[in-house]
Length: 198
Image 1: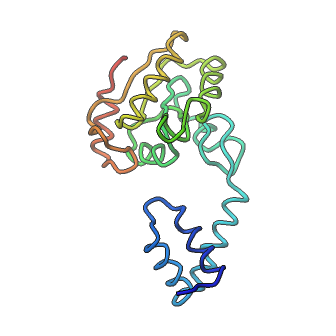
Image 2: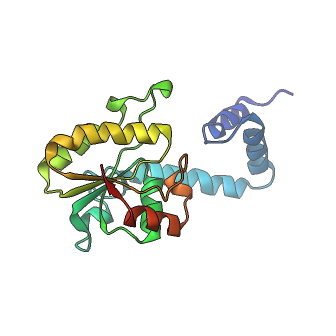
């Protein structure tokens, strides 16, 4: 069946989303065009506005609409404890668990040589500068407990070990292969309370 170039462009755009293959992209495209054009416009408007407004926080590297995010400007946070996570979704999961009251740094990914992601593709220079510039007494490595997350944690450990900072890793309450974004609050709470020195 021949589709218009516009429909094909929409299908290819939807395939960029994680877990969306050709069939799912086709179903989404046809649903939006057949049954929910208003919803499609809402999605398009939200994407345009978000892309226009959202930047990265100058300190912690997460998404923000301001130069510094609300966490980085909060006087209620402990500025001497820094939790390193892979993604803004991981930061959000830790925040929702309500077990951590320090600051964050978001790497925006993890080391994955098979995918062509090396140290230069993460914000490791900014992390190193932050740890040199600010008085940080503890860094909590809260990367995912996957092979890539472990490799990333080891790399960050080597990078920061010269700084005389206490380095800890979240405890194994998080299952191997688990990702912070999908964990329940009890598991995250246990992982933070049982973190260990590395």
